[in-house]
Amino acid sequence: MQVLVVGAGVIGLAIARAAALSGHDVTVAESTGGIANGVSSRNSEVIHAGLYYPTDTKRAVHCVRGRRMLYAFCASHGVGHRKCGKLVVATNDAELAKVETIMAQAEINGVENTEMIGGNAARDMEPELFCKGALWSPETGIIDSHGYMRALWGDLADRGGMIAFETPVEEMSYKTSQWHVRFGGREAGTIPFDAVINAAGLGAQPLARRIDGYPAEKVPRLVLGKGNYFGFAGRPVFSRLIYPTPIDGGLGVHVTLDLAGRMRFGPDVEWIEVENYAVDPQRAESFYARVRTYWPGLPDNSLVPDYSGIRPKLRGPGEGQADFMIATPADHGLPQLVNLFGIESPGLTSSLSLAEEVVGYLST
Ligand SMILES: Cc1cc2nc3c(=O)[nH]c(=O)nc-3n(C[C@H](O)[C@H](O)[C@H](O)COP(=O)(O)OP(=O)(O)OC[C@H]3O[C@@H](n4cnc5c(N)ncnc54)[C@H](O)[C@@H]3O)c2cc1C
Image (cartoon, rainbow, N blue to C red):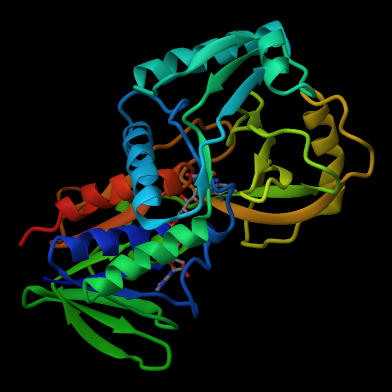
C-alpha cells in the first residue's frame, strides 16, 4: 500500500520504518525542515523501565516491550545509550509508602530486576543522596535520541521510504477507496494514498479536525503540560538517574544525565494555554526547594535555565493519568486511517512497540 505518515518525530519515524519493513511504500510528510523538531527534541532522553503505568494500559505494555526492543535496536544500529539505572527515592515515611506502591506496580507490569533498598544502600551507590529508602531500577537508561531517530530514518530510506520536509498536511478526504491528501508548502498539491497515519504530536488534534467526515466528538481535548529544565553549573555528583516520587502531571523534578555525564534537573509541570518554550528563571526557586529534599548539598546559584518541552496531554490538572490514544477505523469509522493522540512520556521508549501495533491496523 501507499502509506502516508504525518510527522517526522520519533513516533512517526518508528511507524514509517515498521510500515516500510512490512513491505509498504511509505512517505512521511513533515511540516518543518528536518526530523525531530517537535516534542521528540525536547525530552529527558530516558529509556524508561515501565514502573509507574497502570496495569494493562498501552503505556505500561508498550513501555516495557518497547524498552526491550529499544535496547536491542541501539545495540544492532550503534545508537549511543547507557543502562545507568535509576533510583526512585523516598525522603519520608509517606513517600516510602508511595515508592512501595510503585514497586508493586512495576512487578505487575513485568519490569525486571527492580528492588527496594534502604537509605544506607542507596547512599552507598550515590553518596550525595538523602533518602529513607529507594526503589532501584537497573533497567532504566539514557539514549542519544537524535542518533536513534537518524537510525530509524536510515532503515526507512534503505527500504525506499522518503520524508518530504516543509510539507504540512492541510486536509484530507476519503473517496474512491483512497485518501486524497492536500499538502501545503513549496510543492503544494493533492496526492492520493491508500492509508494515512496521523503522528503529528501537538498537531494531531488540529489535523484530525481537518479530516473530512471525522467525528468531531472523537477528537480528544489537547492539554499542554510544559516541562522546564534547569542545567547544573558544576561537576555532576550523580552517576545514576535520581527521581523523587511522582507529582500531578509528571514524574517530579528529577536528576537527568546525558551521555557526556552532564547533569540537569527537570521537568516540572507548568499547565499552559499557548505553545511557548521560554524557561522562566524565577522557576529556579521551586527547583532548589524540590531538589534539596533528596540532595541537600545542592549549592546556591548553581541552576541555570536550560530548555523546555511540552507534553501533549489528554487530561488537565487533578484529572489523573490518561493512556496513549490510538484511534483506529473501529473507533472512528473511517477506513485506513489511524490517529495517535496524547503520546507523551514514555513515547520515546515505547516507539518501536507502538509502531508495530499501529502498522497492524493497516489492512491490505
Ligand atoms: C518534557 C518531556 C520529557 C519527556 N521525557 C521522556 C523520556 O525521558 N522518555 C520517554 O520515553 N519519553 C519522554 N517524553 C515523551 C516523548 O518525548 C514523546 O512521547 C515523543 O517525543 C512524541 O513524539 P511524536 O513523534 O509523537 O511527536 P513530535 O516529535 O512532536 O513529532 C510530530 C511531528 O509532526 C509534525 N507535524 C505537526 N503537524 C503536522 C502537519 N499537519 N503536517 C505535517 N507535519 C506535522 C511536527 O512538526 C513534528 O515534527 C517526554 C516528553 C516531554 C514533553
